[in-house]
Amino acid sequence: MFLAKSEYLQKIKIVANMAKELKLNVYIWGEKGVGKSFLAKYISPDAIVNPKNPTINPIIIENFDKLNNLTQNYSLLIATGSKPLDKTIFEKYFDLDIELKPLISHPEDIEYFMKYFIKTAKKELKTDKKININNPDISENLNSLKRQIYKSLLFKNDKQEILKELENYYVKNHSTYEEELKDFEKTLFNAMKKKYKSKLKISENLKLNRVTLTKKMKVLNV
Image (cartoon, rainbow, N blue to C red; front, side, top):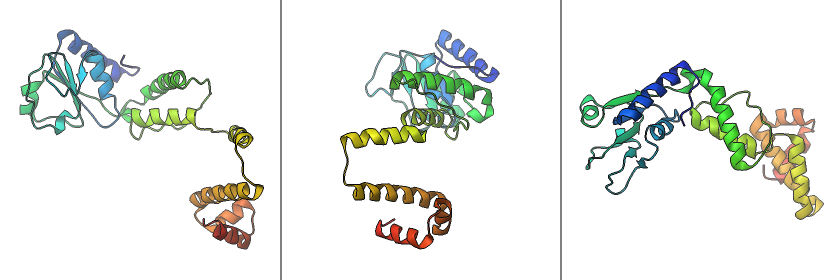
């Protein structure tokens, strides 16, 4: 399956279908996470990826632009890379090249991919948890977007959920009040240190005397 919502990806899909039907050798290139492997598998679903031994089957070779040479001929070759190939090398091995552009150049596809990843992730993780992604992370295109969705489903993002999880933990495991309080304070101060950087800002935001805060952080080695 190759998802295509935007006019741009729909055109890519038309070219891919032609390559699939005519059994053309195709080189797919673009930056990290744009969907090169998805498209390669769409064109040749039965291909062997990066075969270690000679085979008569169609193959997919990843990072082809980093290879020096191919020592074997294959019935069908689909390859991926991060940049266009030298003309001589391209003409030696391929009939067609496809550039996949980053998500930022076709943003109308972002929501479409999000819905797909959320549906897939919920099925894999066996959860019905509702999540809202207001700021999709497309810094690494589909890779970062998928990672963001899985993290949102795996990690607790509501304080009440976190407290409930903590309560369940204490039912099974606990130490003394003093030790548990130290663990809590150390976790809290470490988080505030990352967020506010200075002890002055931490004391202001926690409404805690700065001298008291400094003493506690010193004792806890924060």
